[in-house]
Image (cartoon, rainbow, N blue to C red; front, side, top):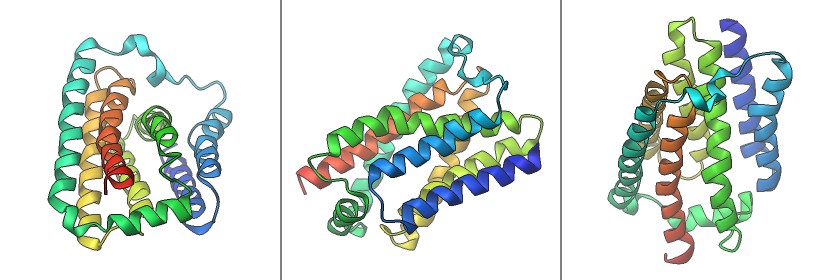
Length: 216
């Protein structure tokens, strides 16, 4: 199971990155591909599998409270990092890339923001903190590979936007964040605590998007 989990994860990630960077398709098609790869295909391939990490009743209240507190800290960290590194980020080039390659403009940004907060965050938690961790539960690799794949997936998306020093910093932050996400889920065995933190992290990122599209 461990071997096939790694192979399946790599194929899934590189397939999505090929769609993200190699094909000129709209954000809608990229989103549909992500839904298929991260949720639909695994559910079909693992018919009869008990996705226990989706059982919300198992989630401890303490984990939820801790997630809320950490989420606020993470959102503050993201926005603070942006303010510190603002001079090293070409927001104009980033906005042009989003508008031309991805198809995200100021007019559609609010709708994309809602999807990112509630939909995209769930897809990634389902795949990286739910499915992969569950399939690797009998291996020590469950503490390393899901967070590593999480970082690799995101950093490849960021490649056109940032210089290498910021990319390296982002890799370290994403990997560490993945470990924290996984740790907070450990007691409950569900993805809901990390999903809450993920939503707050995305709030920090989307606030940067608001500044870029409407105030820059």
